Length: 173
Image: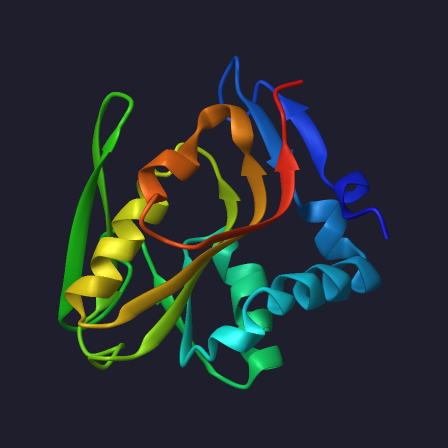
């Protein structure tokens, strides 16, 4: 199955000059979604993770399915102010300014083995912050796992110390 054919380019979204990678067509097709989850799981299975950590928001979509397929728990990493209770936060740089992501304190136990999942690896800033956040919890990042990697943005360079698995590698069009 050619999963790349289910990814549609949307020009000038969310702002001019950006080509958005729309995964909605993949999600609308049950067979394509199942195939993507199966292929992503192949790079994870032998690592024996204890949790999948998904990055808000599109990392939740396949991340929870990966966790279910592997029979392990799922932990969301969210934007600030979206999680109840005590939280841990990690800031990261944007092109102009700064943002942060958060995880509930106690969501991960020390020494847990974690796969971080997101839909797209672009510049690597969010994924790098997610790795730091997981490590603040005392857990180990086994792999950063992505449906799509935008090779031309070189996000992999910010994640050099981690194993990376990307199902689809896309070049600049």
